[in-house]
Length: 387
Image (tube, rainbow, N blue to C red):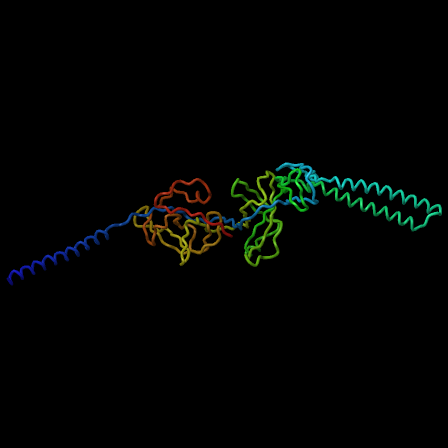
């Protein structure tokens, strides 16, 4: 019996030892197999840096305003007798727009004219009698004062009558009528808007750090988000005060609008061009990766095999932005070959190969771009920033 127990224990030890040996043997073989595998190079798009002429500028968003634009209001209450315009009519200065019922004012004016005739006749009669020595001097003075009083009353009534007829204060395009014939209106009620669209103004704000770059008469470029309108303008005023809440300063520019495509209240993108600078290193914004440790760009170094490179992660100091590109102040130099897309799959020292079939600049300049390969990171639209 003891012999059988010993044999069973020996067999059990052999089986257990074999299982343990097989486990370590398998893990060793897997490690050797994986250790011999070399991942294929990661495809990336690249760009060779060159010194460029940089066109710095200040970018902002603004609102279009008409150089002359008002809400036309009723001056005197009454019943609307006639509306003499239609929406979007081209209006000339002095053109009649709205007629308010003025029957009572006309009657009062006629009565005042009759009273004036009587007063003038009385004054003439008093002067004649005084000249003959049968009239008192104070009678003449009273008669002349009565004439002046009636004339003042006549002028007041004429003013009230004029307020019943509303005319255009300047040339422009009138809006949709807000009153109808037969409607009772009160003083101060707006009946239409009048806008001179030939000359437009643009109000926008810039950071206080950029005040020194603003000059009266400086040139700006404005563009709409829709419609494709673009025009140049001139800075005509800078608010002599910085807003304490936003730390921004208000700027106003004037823009010509002969085509009438720009409307008051429209959203505009504004750019103020500053003097050009030579010898600037600028890279696509897609090439820069930002982390808590700083901004980095992958630079290609020659690898062991032909047409293969290794990626080196370089910390850089970035500066101003312009369109889809960003200035590199420190960390790169002309001649460096950088990765512009695909860096999301890279690690320092990774093997890469160049695939420039996709033009990243086409995305940043709103030009049609070819379809990106599967390994490429999508280009993110860069936010508008002050330069």
